[in-house]
Length: 94
Image 1 (cartoon, rainbow, N blue to C red):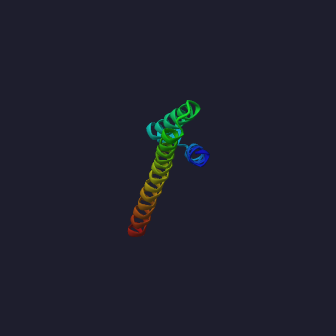
Image 2 (image 1 turned 30 degrees about the vertical axis):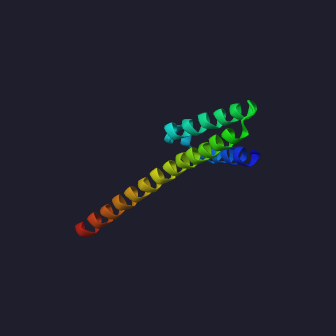
Image 3 (image 1 turned 60 degrees about the vertical axis):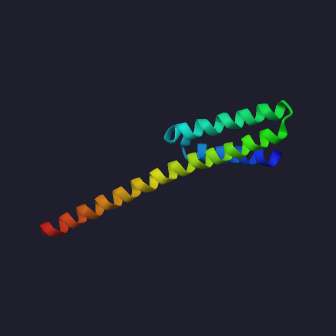
């Protein structure tokens, strides 16, 4: 059971490190909420249900992290396309 909780905490920490709290707040809040629910369920003595909730929290946190990273990648691609367009425009003006 502690492995699932540790995994969920680590995934939530990674999501926080990439800025998911502000860039993917819905997914981040879902992960944090599910992790808190898992801890409360574990404290109440239902370790099987807590483990399931912890696994779900880890998935939510990974989704939050992936959402942020994907958005950054899309922004980099858009910037690269704009740079290429400007270079092409400059090249046709000379």
